[in-house]
Amino acid sequence: LKLLSSAAQYLVPVHPDGGSPAREMPGGRQGSSLPELRSSSLRKLKSLASPSGDPAVGSEKSRVGQKLQLALKQAKELRGQNDQGDSEAVPEAGRARSSSKCAVPDLQCPDLKGRWHSVKNLRDRRNAAVLKGMRWMHKYLSANRYMGLMAVGDDAACLFFEVWYTSCNSNIRSVAKNIAQELLEKYERHLLEPESCGCGKCRLPGAHVKKKMDARELFLQLMFLLRCKEEMGLDIERMAAKADSLWKDCGFQDNTSRLFRITPENLAEVSDAEFTVLIMYIMVMEFNQMLFPRRWPIRWGLREVFTHLKTRKYCGPPYDAACKFHDCFYFATHIAFAISAYSAIKTQPRDVPWLFEYNRRSCLYWTQQAWHRFSGRHPERLVDIDGLSEAVDVMRGCGLTDGGDPLLCSATLAILELQRPDGSWPYWEIGDVEGLTAKEPKQDELPYYHRLHPTWVAVQSLRDRNFEQDRKGNICWAQFMARLLKETKLGRLNSKIVYAWPAKKKKGKPSAVLTKCSTGDLETASALGNEEAAELLEEYDPLNCQDDLKESQDDLKESDEKEEASDSRNSDENSDPTPEQQ
Image 1 (tube, rainbow, N blue to C red):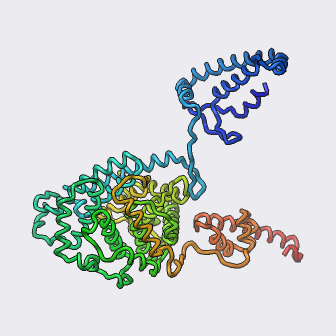
Image 2 (image 1 turned 90 degrees about the vertical axis):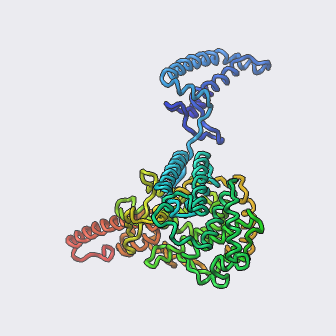
Image 3 (image 1 turned 120 degrees about the horizontal axis):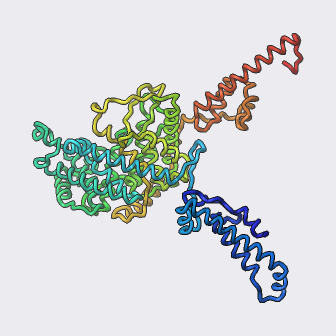
């Protein structure tokens, strides 16, 4: 009987769907369903009631044998009644319990607001959003005889290769591979055989007399396509032969600066926006040195670039009228993409701590703007979907997941919320810089690249990563990059990054307002006035949430009105107040 009473605290009800909720027990054990605990208790009672070979134990058992046998009989009857009721009420639940002794607990992940979300449900939402986004992009690029593909260029042909390269989900990987092979073949034919291409761009009137693509641009596009097709195991003979002829005809083998149109000594003259494109050109040439050794050798590359990056100045949030933060942020994310070769390998934040700290601060900034938009108080607030998605992409490239990082969880939820029913994400331009409002141009007026890019980077950011895939170039690139980062010491900047957002706390002795706010007592904090309290509340809030600050100001205002009413009553009752009352 004591055994039954002690086991009662571990009995948990069974769900109608057949599973039993996870319940933590003393000693770290997992709670079991009701029938399992009954069976376990009956077995222990039966062992106690059975005779033993030990005389002392047998004599002791004989004294309570009748009571135990009676308890065993009653327990069996109770078990039969309950099992029959359970089977009649939920027969499917019984089968589920018999097939699994212990239900798997539903893992939860928190966001920055302290709300908990199911990891499994969030993963399913992300995978569904990725597949939906890929279907929209494929339809958009292949419409009108692949007009979108030809307008965007090699980026459109290679983006599905990047999804396939390290995606964890097999369904996403399979769909991405099929689309990548189709687009790569179409775009290769457009570049090498424009007369027989038949795409929408080549069928336009006068397309054959238009200016041909620049030789340098054609060669660099072939470099991206060659990397994709080589790692996917596709035929590269025609493209490689064309690249060989361009390499010799343009004299790139003797002058790498002619290929990149800049010398290592003049890298400081390159703006952040131009460097965003340049660093990816240099990265793909370095990567192809491993896939095609000594075929297209270069005399300088990422080593000189990383050495220069330590001397540059970087601008953090908030958004400014000159778009300095905008250009610097995209340059920073592409530095991370150059290190990982577009997420081919897992990056380590400890190698370049300032870069990933900058990325996290920017991600937090855009996540907060999404909260302002979702709250309804600022429905036109600008959210840079491209920037937020690239920041999340960089974080996932470090191996982070929703369950282990609240900021990543919050940013992921914001991206999912902004997806449209057709699977795409909108393209917004900034309207008012001071109010940070967004305006959406007409879709017909947008270039293909601008319309595609938000969905492209959002899909990249939402997919799970598996960096253990056996590819041709990722192992060599990981070894090369680890050695290069150590030699160039990119992790140390010559000057620190000054962040204007969020505002730092003032140094000195903490005031009464900040002390009371930190403990949640806002009534005493109102004694120093609304202006000082509002200022200190804004400094105290790590996310700089203006909505919460406004609510706090309203509370302080109500407290002031109550105090003024109380003071007026005291002045009426006593014309000469004491110093304590004053």
